[in-house]
Length: 537
Ligand code: HEM
Image (cartoon, rainbow, N blue to C red; front, side, top):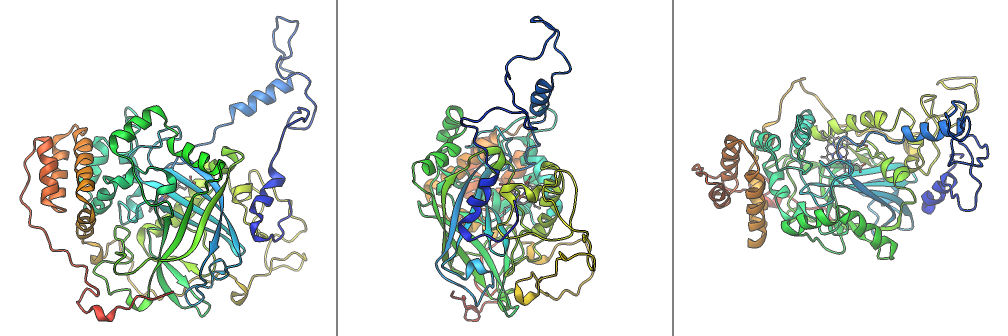
C-alpha cells in the first residue's frame, strides 16, 4: 500500500489491506494457482511413491517447516491488543509532542503485556515482572513506551543485562526451571548484586502476581526528557494507572491457576475486550524541572530508584483504552517490534546507563528475530504517516521505491527526500552539554542500594509484608547452595532486620547483625525542601 498520511483513528484501516479472509474463497498456492486437492499428495499410483514434482505438497510442507521464528530473548510470552489514547490536558509548556497537545486527536495504540523470563509457552502466573509496552501511532511517527509493571529495575548499567538474563533464565545444563526466579543461578547473581535489592522487594511482593493485566500499573522506569518548542528540557517519569485499581492473587492461588489455566491473563484480557469490557489506564507524568536535577538524595539517572509520589505527584493527563483484540496473534502480537529508541519530537532520552544500552539492543535483536532490516514494513509496525528515506533493499523488502535517486544529495530524481526542518517537526536531539573524560565507572550518586528497598518494604501493610517473607522463604528454600541463602539473608538485613530474621528462621539460618542506615528522603539532599517546587501541568 502507498504510504500516505492517514487520519488518527486509521491504524486499523491501515491494517485492513493486509488482512485476508478466506471465507467462501477458492484455495490457491502462494503464487495464485488454484488447488483442487490439498489432502492427497501426487503419487505414482494410489500406493505411491510420492512424486518430487508435486509443487503443491512441496510448497505446503516448506512453508510449514519455516513457520517458527525465534521467540524474544526476553519477554517471550505476551498478549497484545489494540486501543486508543485520548489526551485530557495539553502540556505545550513541557513538550511539543503533538499527541500530548491536542485533545481532539485519538491516537491509535497497540499494547503488548508480557512476562519476562519464561518461554513463549510458559504460564502467565509465574512470579515475574510484567512488560507493559505501548506503541503510539502518532501523526509525528511512532512513539514506543516500553515499560514494566514495576517502577525500578534490577541493575544500573546495560553492561550487566546479559548476566542478569543468563542468571534468571532456566539453568544452562538442564533448562530448568521455567519459573522466573526459584533457582540457584538467579539468587547467586542477586546475592552478588546489591543494586538489585530494591527491585527484589518489588519482585517478591504481590506486584509480581497480578490478578489481571487490566489491574496492573505501568512505568517507563527510566527518567525521560520532555522538550518544548523553545527547546527547553524538563525531566519526566511516565506512569499508567489502571482504572480498575491494582490487584494481585496470592502465591497458592497463582500456583493453582498456573496448573489449571496457564493462559489465565491472556484469556482474561481477550474475554474482557471481546465482551466490550474495555480495560482503561490513565497516563500519568511526574515532572522534575531541569534545574532540580540534583536536588534529590538519589540520582534521577539511576533506574533502581523511583521518585516517591509524595514528593513529585503523578499528574494524569490522558487515557488509554484497549478496545479491540488482534485478528492474528502471530502477525500482530508476535511480529510487533517495540523499541525505547522510537521517540517523537518533544520526547528525548537521558543518560541513564541502562536506557543508553537499551537504545542499542532492541533494533539489534529485531534484525534477527524478524528476519532482516525491513521489519518496520510489517503492517503492525508501520507508522500511520508516510516513510521516505534512502534506505533500500534487504530481505523481504515490500516497498517498491520508484526513480533513480536513492542517495542524497542528488539531481537525478524528483523524489529526493528533502529533510524536515526542526521548525516543521523534524527531530532534533536535546543539545545537552557533555564535557567529561571517557571512563568505565559508576557515579557515587548511584551507591545507595538500600534506602528505597526499605522505603518500599515499610510502605507495605502487615499482610503484604508477610507475603514478601513467604515469597523469600519459598524462593530461597529452593536454592540448593547454602552459601547463597546465607548471603541473601545478609542482604535482607540491609533492608529490615525483622524481614531478615523471619526468612532466616524459616531456613534455619542465623541472622548477621547489621546497623541500618537511616532513610533520608528529604528534598533537596542538603536539607532545604523550600528549594523544590513541583511543576504543575
Ligand atoms: C523486550 C533488551 C531492560 C522492558 C526486550 C527484548 C530485548 C530487550 C532484546 C526483546 C525485544 C524483541 O525481541 O522484540 C533489554 C536490555 C535491557 C532491557 C538490553 C537493559 C539494558 C528493560 C527495562 C524494561 C524493559 C528496564 C522496562 C522498563 C521490555 C519489554 C519488552 C522487552 C516490555 C517486551 C516488548 C514486547 O512486548 O515486545 N528487552 N531490555 N526492558 N523489554 Fe527490555
